[in-house]
Image 1: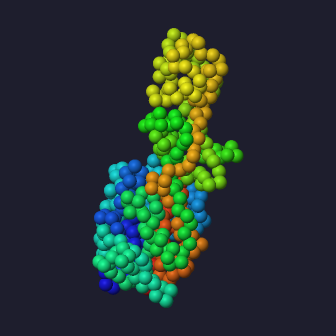
Image 2: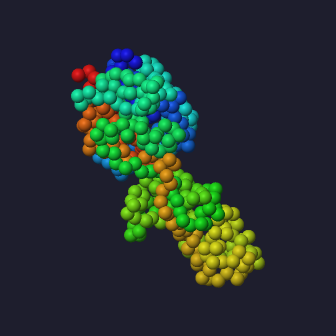
Image 3: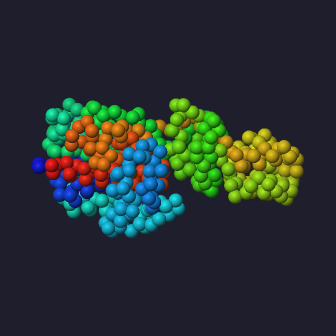
Length: 421
């Protein structure tokens, strides 16, 4: 690595974009990744399909970023979603736009995105070092002078000098992919304030025992509504969710969790409309028809035409209707309770799952301590920060990867300009 201008720590989305940008500007760049290969977290994004970005305007990305979206103004103007789409197309990866303006590779394979980035790194002669862990950033006279590689006290560790360092090690979500908070602690030791990392885009735990009884049940085309303790709706969307042994998961729930940001101050309740295509009067007419045509059937058998098998006993128990009760014996009040459950199946929420299970980390380096145009630290000259390390996170739909591309590119450009001075 002798003569290296910039060392990028972290080979995820932001780190690779930063390295490519700086190298394209003529800087001599080295990228250090603690895993065997770069882009490990990208492999699992979008269920392995890689939701590259969202086909929308910079303003819409900021609107979908509830935490410090204004900080991204310059970065997103420089690297809007349209630029990201053109960038990957230019690297030979055809893209497509799906529901919600989500952008994916036509192949539906995240490996195509990773391979394209890797090929560009190699084309630009970026020095790539894997299986190595940076333990600290060295500083002299208030400016970056290099990095230390190897764990503290490791006799096999060594130092590498450089003019600038870009920290892009991610947050704390999915630690198996290498996001273990190393960069956050390094930044903290250098004087940065770390906003307490919390999980975002994460499954939810529920104290309701019926969730475990329906473990593995996936419901499609339902409407999920989340309300806070003041009965204010904080999220409502139609899609798919999953019951688990601990509570709720699935796309709808992950999206909803990013709107539930105050578990320390508020409580939340989820309500599921199991039959969103039918209003109450239409659904009640449907129930009457089913009860009439199957008048002599036990309710636990008849309900199989109205709900999935695992859901039937839970619905009957919550409606206080015995499973062996004949349909013709169901009272108007019992039918009303069942109707209300179909339209408003409530699930209490006790909190999010641990950050280990979160797709995105909320929290990180305080953005007021970072230059929003260059991503350079306001505390240490030559130190740049990008991606999930920053206290910026968005809703699901490709927005978080767009933030990684935008902040990574801004950091790469900022570092390249810095080392030329």
